[in-house]
Structures are given as structure tokens and as C-alpha cells.
Image (cartoon, rainbow, N blue to C red; front, side, top):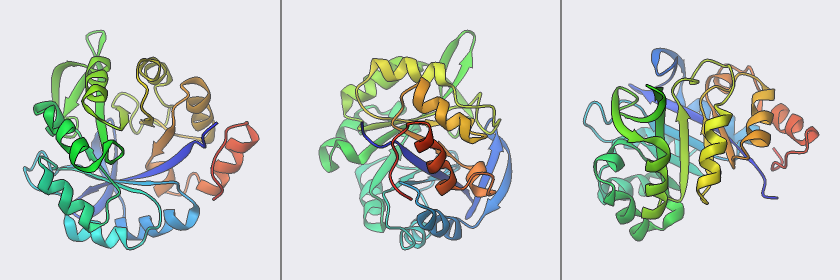
Length: 252
């Protein structure tokens, strides 16, 4: 069995790492460069950097900040926020990205997924999906969760896989920041319908939640923010606990 991945996420706004609950009430969580260095030392498998207001503010991701973070890392680095064309992806690749994450721009122009996959390879393209349960259905949300669409989450993810997305970063807005656990039911359903890896996001509050999402939803990776940023869970401790529960992980 492939090793499961543990991925801290840096949600960045105005040059600082922030974290909220259900995508609102954002609080400062530290300097992105310092946090990146800490996670590299702790044995994180990858790092995700999301410039969470780039799309809503109609601007590009902060390249200089990305370069500073990349210099701290020797693990795969995924960057998202404000990517709308090949030139944006190239700039981030040159700044140190191993993968790029697209969300709102892909919904508005699905061919962007295909274009990026052909230009850089399927493994380079991570589709981020922010989903919320609305009127009995999981709906895709854009612009950092501010804008609801009529897109069914499962159908959109299947379409994205067909277009060339190499991985799905699926965030449950209902669970985000609550520390009540991942949305294992939704994750399991979608995981059964696609063949590309899924990164679970939204709801991690303790080590048992990671055990549950790997066992119950069989996802490839689990992403979290505040529990790592505030030192509530240390990655080496989490990996030891996962191993005890028969879940394969890479050494810290």
C-alpha cells in the first residue's frame, strides 16, 4: 500500500498565515516562511500554500513570498491562488512550485485544466474544490468560498479528472475549522467514483480524525492547518500514531 501523506496548509492573506472557521473570522496564525521551515523539519510530506484572497481581489499570487517559502523546503510544494493562465503557472513553477492548485478559474474555464495538464503534465495540476451542503446537495463554491455555484461537487470532480486534473484537494466548508473531523462520508463517495488521488481537507481536530479519514474514506492524503500551526498536533507524533493503527506513512 502506498504511504499516506500528511500535508500542512498555509492559507495566506496580506503576507500572513491565517485560519478561520467555515472560511470566515480569520485569525493570524504566523509567518508563512517560518511555518514552512518548521514543517520541513517536522517531516511533513508536502506543503500547500494558498493565497486565499488572490482571486477575489483579482490579482496574482505573491511571487516573492512564494520564493521565500520555497527556499525553506525540500518537500513537494503546491501553490494556489489567482492562477488563470499558463503564464501564471510558469511563474510559480519558476518561483519554486512543484504543483499548482486551481479552483475558481477552472470552474469558469474548464479547458484551463486540460491546457495546464498538456503543458506541464497531469501530476502538476491539483484541482481544489471548496464544497458546502446546500438544499440537500454538495455545491461547489468559488472565490475563497464566497460565491455559490449550481455545480454538483461530485460531477465537477469527475469532469475535472476527465480533463486532466492529477489530484483533487477537497475541502468541506461545513467542516472547515470546526475540529470535529473530516467529512468522511463525502470523501469516501467521491473517492470511489474517481481514480486520481484525493487530499482531504476541513475539520481536523485530533489524531483520531486522521486515522478515521484514512481508514473510512481511504484518501491518499490529509491536509490540516490550525492544529499544526498552533502546535496542537506535532507531525512526528501524528505519524507514530498512524503507524500504530496500521496506516503506512513515510518516516518523519
